[in-house]
Length: 194
Image (cartoon, rainbow, N blue to C red; front, side, top):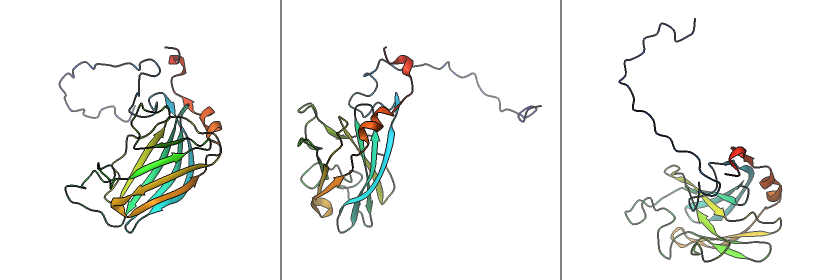
C-alpha cells in the first residue's frame, strides 16, 4: 500500500489540455536576453573581492559564470542606506542619466567594452541581463561579456556618481576561464545540430 492510497483527493474540473513549445535550434533560444541558459549549465568560478565603495554602498565581485562562448561577470551591490524617492525608486542603478552606474572592462589584449556601448556597434559587448530583484538593501547584477577572455590581466572599472563612487579600477582574476568554458555542461547535446 502506498502513502497516498485511501487519501481523499479534492475533486477538480477537467483541466484544459496543455500547450507545448519545443526548444528551437541552437542560437534561437536566448538572443539578446542573456546567455544560452536553456541549453547549458555554466561552469561557476567563484572569486570574491570588493571592487568599489561609496559612503553608503559596496560593490563586490563574486565570480564568473562561464558559458561555451561568453562569460557572466557577477556583482553584488549592498547598501546601508538607500534612496526611496520616485526618481530613483527601483531603477536603483540603471536610471538613465549622468549619475547611473557605469561599468567597463579592459581585456588583456587592450580592447575595452562598457555598459554604455550601443549593442551592435562593436563585436565585443557587455550588457546587463536577468537581474534578480534581491532585497531591500542588496541587489545582484549580472553582466554578460560576449566572449570568453584569454587568461591575463582584465581590469574592471566602475563609476557611480549617484552613490558617490568615483572612477575605480580593480584587476579581476581570469585564470581558468578557457578551461571552464570546455567544462560547461550541455543539457540537450542531441539537439545541437538542429
